[in-house]
Length: 154
Image (tube, rainbow, N blue to C red; front, side, top):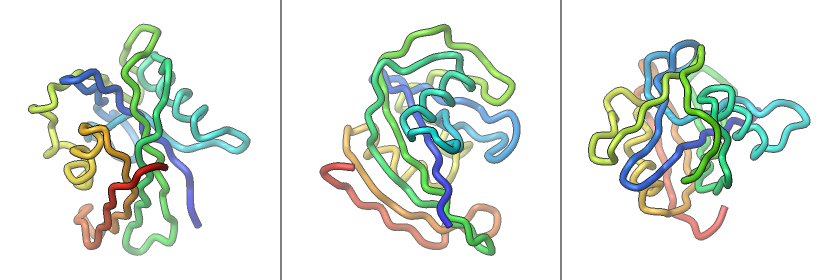
């Protein structure tokens, strides 16, 4: 069974906006902004809603750049994450109960404090590529299997 999720990263070269997850799944990790797609909601609408809820901002334009399926050992659910990039936003960037936003220079992205798959797909993201992939995690979020392909369109 697949569950749909969104992930949105603001990229204003050479800076990316990430958020420190303050609660729930991914606690203590830097990540993009996103979450579950709700019933009756488009994936794009979910991406913007999550961005507003977690960081107080809205994207002027969302570009879908990736789709990654995440699987976890001993869990039959597949988390399908639709990854978006945007440069421009409106609203006032602010910390929420869930996320603490912070700008990072692309040379200083804190990969050791992020999900272990990010170091594989983030270079494609930063280089304007589109991609599809799958990551299978074991205990302690160790990557047991991975596939990552650059694609022409999503």
